[in-house]
Image 1 (cartoon, rainbow, N blue to C red):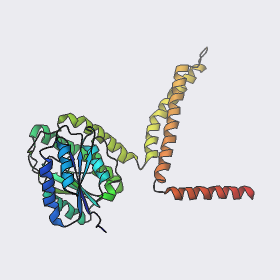
Image 2 (tube, one colour):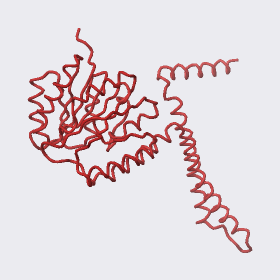
Image 3 (cartoon, rainbow, N blue to C red):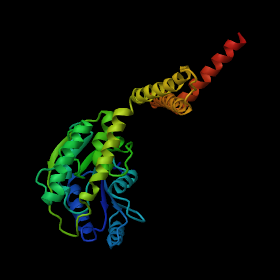
Image 4 (tube, rainbow, N blue to C red):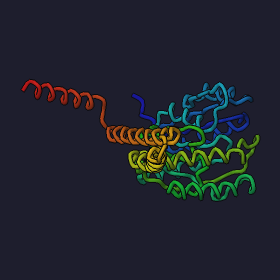
Length: 323
């Protein structure tokens, strides 16, 4: 019987035909001396060069490599999510495929995990990137992310991270969410650590990222803040939304009805109708919040337990009716 996999190294590639070979060799040289069962999950994100062909060649020559190929380019987050889905290791390490992350740092990430942490984030403390287009926007974004999410990570954009598989496999990833994984998992209360890692200048090809993705990050940040604040207290947040709707509804409805009290006055249909619409929206929002609260409270109940509880309630009702 083969030993269970201890580690999965997940690497997305996009037009990195010159980097994928050296990256594979670097990972093997860094992880093999650790003497743990491991695999490499290479994900081709719809590359237009020879990246996919070279990945397939590497996978044929090394049984430890699993290859996932996208038909078109979906983005780094989708590629990482696919790698996580197809991985089999107890611990997962993600990293970029452009040779700027150093596989030698994997041992340090795993050592930190062994101390009891659930997530270990790399910090490129000597980042080898352009100042104006990469470093300055990154500093601003990291401070904003830390302020909004309450998770003060120095370098959210560093792809070199280590996770416990049981935690990260339950986190939905989309858009540019891969950099918000620590914030996404904050509801589960994980132990998060940050260590300094090496960062190298790009050797081959050109960078796939720039200032154009800033708006995506800002939108995703709004989503993360909403989710982390709202998911455990849906009724409270829906109630807060209901307050202005109720006030506007009562004001417009009252104004519409009061016009009928004036001599020769008539009920204002526009005001009255608007008031009814706002009040109906408030009631709908409150009902949605109640439903969300119920779903959250029952989230940890297994289907068989829920079915057993339902059957018990039905039996109790039948017994009371017979009595």
